[in-house]
Length: 257
Ligand code: CO8
Image (cartoon, rainbow, N blue to C red; front, side, top):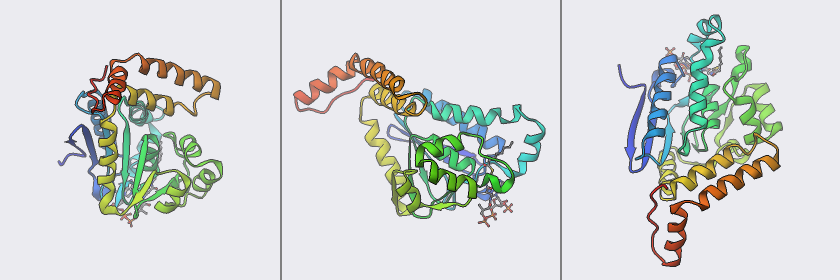
C-alpha cells in the first residue's frame, strides 16, 4: 500500500503530502492517523523549522471519508477522537504550518486549511463547507475558525449554503494569503516556509502562539499573553544574537535558545 501521507525534508522544511488522490484525499481513519503521526514527528524534529501540507492536483482534501461516516455515527462520541487529536496537534504544533492548496478543499479539508497558520492557493482551488448538504455540520473547528478568518457574513454564506468559493474569493475574504498559478503554489509555500526558517525559532514559535490565540480571549487577556511571549523572546540568546548581528551588519546565527 502506498504511503497515505508522504514526508520530504526540503532544507529546514518538512513537506507533508496527502496521497490518496483516488478518493480526493478524503480523511479516512488511516489517513487521519498517518497525518497525525507525521505532524507529531515533524513537531518534535529539531531539523524542522516549518511544515508545509499539500495534496494532489485535483484535491487538497475532499473532507471526511463519507463512506466511513455511518460507522462513525454508530460509534459516537469516541469515533470523533482521532479527528480531535489531528486538529489539536495541527493547531498547536510548535512549528508554523502552511497549507498549499490546489483543487478542492471541502469539509474537513477546508477545516485543515483553517487550522494551518498560513494558506496559499492555486487558481484551481475551491473552498467549501458542504456539511449541511449531508445533514451534518463542520465539527473540526470549521464554524469557529471560518468566522474568525473571513468574518460572520462571508462565513455564514459558506456555512449555510454549503456552496464552494473560488480562490480569488478566498483571497479577497482573507481565507488565503496569496493566489498563484497551480504550478507555483507549492514553490510559494516552500519559499514562505524557508523565509520563516531563517528567523529565530523561539521568536517564530512565540509570535505564532500569540497570533493563534488572538481570538480565544478578550483583547486585554490576549495583550497580556502577547506581553508574556514578548518578554520570553527578549530573554533569549537569539534576541541578543539578532540585535548584535544587526548592529554588526552580519547575518544572525540563531540557535533556538
Ligand atoms: N469521502 C469519500 N470518498 C470521496 C469523498 C469523500 N469526502 N469525496 C470524493 N470521494 C471519492 C468519490 O467517491 C470517488 O470515488 P470512486 O472513484 O471510487 O467513485 C472519487 O473520490 C472521485 O470523486 P468524484 O468521482 O465524485 O469526483 P467529481 O469530480 O465528480 O466530484 C466532488 C468531486 C464534487 C468533490 C464530489 O466527490 C463530492 O461531492 N465529494 C464529497 C465532498 C464533501 O461533501 N465533503 C465533505 C465531507 S463531510 C466532512 O468533511 C465533515 C463531516 C463530519 C462528519 C462527522 C461524522 C460523525
